[in-house]
Image 1 (cartoon, helix red, strand yellow):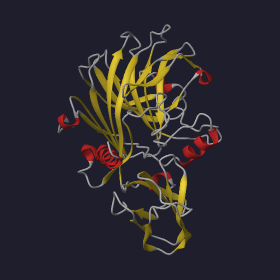
Image 2: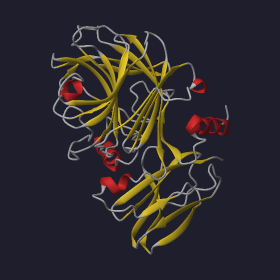
Image 3: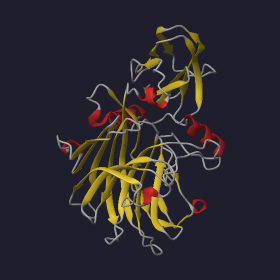
Image 4: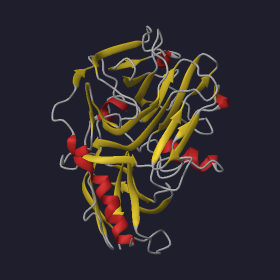
Length: 381
């Protein structure tokens, strides 16, 4: 397959069935179809391990899917979790590079539509403590001094979609408190809604989890994207919404497993969609109004040049930079104090050394007045 055909396929996958909604864009995605068993590049996933008290967890790409098997967390609970904010890569041999990527913390968004495919391969417990599948999001990085900064769901609040395949049920809620995430029946949880769904083993389920400001929605169905039902399975609101946090966790939680006996699941086709203008900055920056608007580059895809436009509502020091898929800054287009108003910059597809860059996905990021935004673009030669 030619490079051009490969790029066209990448663009098709990036568009998805949400592309018809003009106010949305694909923040990040992972289809687990690269040659990367640890699942550390394309999208870099963070795992918990023995240093965190989690023993025996297995996470690896298998035949184009991400496989998760629970380990034992301190002998108290069975846990298998992966976490990301959409960071382009994790480098096990270079923690400093990984840390700098994570400190950017701008690859995701608290207002989002999470789409994914899940298949339950082995699910064991249907007792007083029912095993469940968890999508926990709007998690925040609070300790930037860690060698690999992340979000810790055992101490930080989060919103969650819970699927209980053996109990044939689902729920949407949020939790807060030390270890609260591990016990949805505990006092640390507040559920906004619950319902029934007839889950079965070894069946691919497609899930759409919608979070925008205080609104929350869920769809679950079998088949393909084209089979998506028109109506939401559940809709609700949080009267005390917290719209902040960029990290998301997928995983399985249940009773402590015996050796090689943990709950198992497969994930695939994960997509995170966001809104071009969300108002999130108003809430995450102590009420400070969003001081810029960053438009999608045009044309996109492009060859060899593209125009990036943005608008500033107030005067300020502004930096506009280009990054490659590994998160490396390859060019700074603007680094100056600019007046309020509309601005446009042309990128000629060259790096800081004036060398033409290869075809692929690139990011452009604007930073001004302590706020930032990042978008993707495609260079296709």
